[in-house]
Image (cartoon, rainbow, N blue to C red):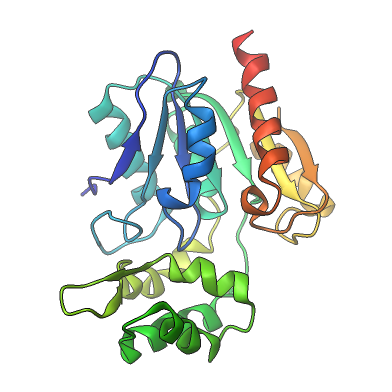
Length: 260
């Protein structure tokens, strides 16, 4: 059963640009980019299941998440869209492109390859559980709880975007942490589908990120044979936040070539 995804739709003409966040992210993380893109495009930014303001549901496999996204496109009457996905969201859009290529005008994949990855979020999950247990009443208390497991302040600030104040004044997690952590193995797997997506593809990677290395490119091009690979040299995995102007420019240039 699909989940009805929370989303922001700017409206507008032309082929929409649909933006899909990564693990523990949300549409909110893309506000500044959406504000820029909406000057040229209709933009739809989504919250995946168990993220942001979307409902919680068991199952974090890519077939299920791609089905959620397809259902949203149907609901909005979008026949074809440019799909942009970061990290886990990149695997979601690759899955949709492989399963339903007729619905995809192009893919923009941000710092992820179409392959399985090893585990690497134990400290993050521990930090989020600590916040849930600690029931902080302000951001400083929440940051101190997160810091018991995560030393990097930028990561703590990112994780804190998943907190919202409840009626009793406590900052609580809005994500489905139990569902995400319970099916984490599925999140680490390769995208769903068989074969390649042969439409236009832009792959953006961070020069300081280990997620899309040169060694991965031959296998990446088996799935995305037309991929243009652009490296943002000063960025890590959160390249859209670390080099926002370069990220914007690369996406804009790519879309401009398709619409010329």
